[in-house]
Length: 383
Image (cartoon, rainbow, N blue to C red; front, side, top):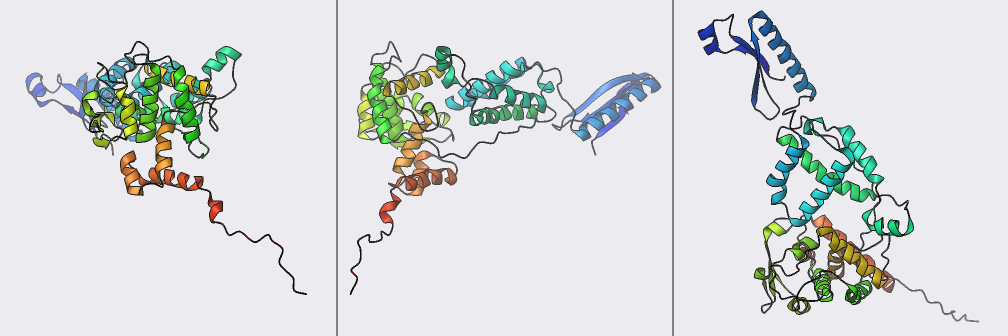
């Protein structure tokens, strides 16, 4: 039973008398804090306090009680950025910012407490109608495109938004967490960059134009990036935040800081000589190994342009993503090391994820080599 009650303050009763002391409606809100509101003195004040207590009791029982009803979305967004997003890894922060940007563009929220499941459903509907970023250039050159937004992309944004609203609920700004109806996504074999496509991408880096104004060429920057990703299995956020002070090229080692890894775990890594060779060409006064000053989204744009120059058309998608480099490392090395070693190097929280890559590697092998082959030569018939 929801906890609400009506009372008079004993100190006010002692000072002003029972008839002049104010009546209060009091309750315990969902966060466990005691709340109260003065309703005035006399029989009218008592009646108003009882009505308010009953109203709050009903809201608490049905889950419709709202705390801090007047908090604006803008104020919450600033608080969330400073108190939560500032502690996120680079990749998670960027994805959360993009999800919030699209939510604000489609829903234009005013108050946090007013956000409902209907708003989430409306967001899903409108987001699915958006033109995918990868199609924007083609749309500009050839007119509109009918290709829909990927349900997987929308689901990824929904996961980030759900985390945001869960925090709003914990802060007492939302009485009830909106429902998130995730879209059904067909089960597909994850893509990865095979050795042939990797060689073509590596060669096409000579067409790169960004990053510009660096003490090294864009070609060397991109060659270093793709080789590092392909031969370490690191996430793109881990590569772009790698600092020179954490790298020892002479010893061939690197240190990944906890704040820059998805699992918030530190990692000391030995680098392959080929990775060291490519990083050597990027030595500069910049604090990070792979400096980029053109905006986060531009890294994707430039990577796509390099693939266009290479004439690459991945299966079932317009372009390879950076994560396809990480998947390539796992897939190409799955049969070269134990499952435990692969899980540790990839820093997978769940072994199920590691097993996926092991299965992919097994599928790539030519199973036909192990099949029984019947003899196709005609047998000699004894006459």
